[in-house]
Every structure is written in C-alpha cells, then in structure tokens.
Image 1 (cartoon, rainbow, N blue to C red):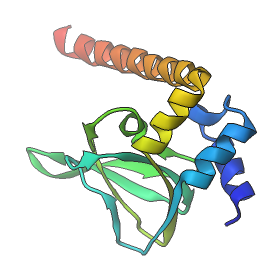
Image 2: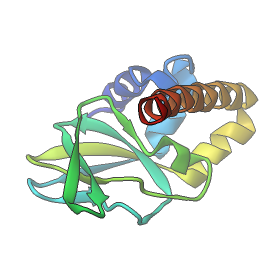
Image 3: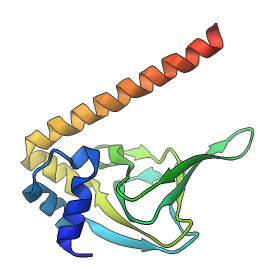
Image 4: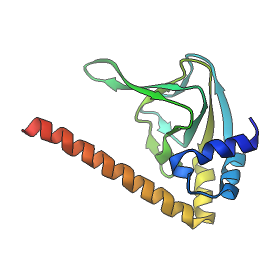
Length: 152
C-alpha cells in the first residue's frame, strides 16, 4: 500500500483521528507494515508489548486464557482497529492473543517512534491522555456493573 493509504487508515483510528495529516505522515513513514498468513499469531497473551498494531487488511481472532479450561474467544479485530495502544507509551504485557484466521496485514507502531512524536508534538500527548482516561472510565463503569450483579 502507498503511504497515503496508510495515512488514510491511521486517520480512521479513533486515537489518531484528531492528529493532523502531517503528523500522521510521520507516523506512517516510521511505522512498519507486516503481512501475516492464515493461522499466524500476531502476539500471545502475557508476552511483553513494545508496539501497537493497526489492522490494515483482514481481521484477527482475539482470545484470552482461562484457568477453567480452553481460551475464551473475545471476538475479532477488524480493519482500522488499534491493538495494544498502551504499549506505545509504556511497558506492558499483552492482555490477549491475536491470530489471523486468513491473510492479514498490520501497521506496527513501535514505542520509540510514538514517544518521539509525543516529545516533538505535545498536543498529541493531550489526545492520548484523554483517550486513556476515557478507556479507564469505561472500564470502571463495566467493573461497577459486574460488581452489582454479584453483590445484589
């Protein structure tokens, strides 16, 4: 795919939606494209994460291990989905496993590239902080609803 196609894809990702085209061009230029074959694993739950992936083509089956038995199917990440966004900012472990059921492609955005963008363009840091805050608020709300079911 051409650089302009990658920029268009990145602009459709909610985290990058409010970032200008010139900054997205820098991310797209510094990112790496990776093609996966059917059945190939993008990442495994529990492994160290040093980057995020934007699904560029195809989809990925997401699952999480279960102590009670086989892995739990979480759903699919489709084109335009950002996987592992927190790994662009800090050291974390993967919270799930992602496998390509068919041929797929991703754009890999590594931590050093993204951190350099944050340093050079502080406005991006504000956007990222707000997105993380929104995600934490949604997680807290979900946990509250789950806790109510078990306490009532």
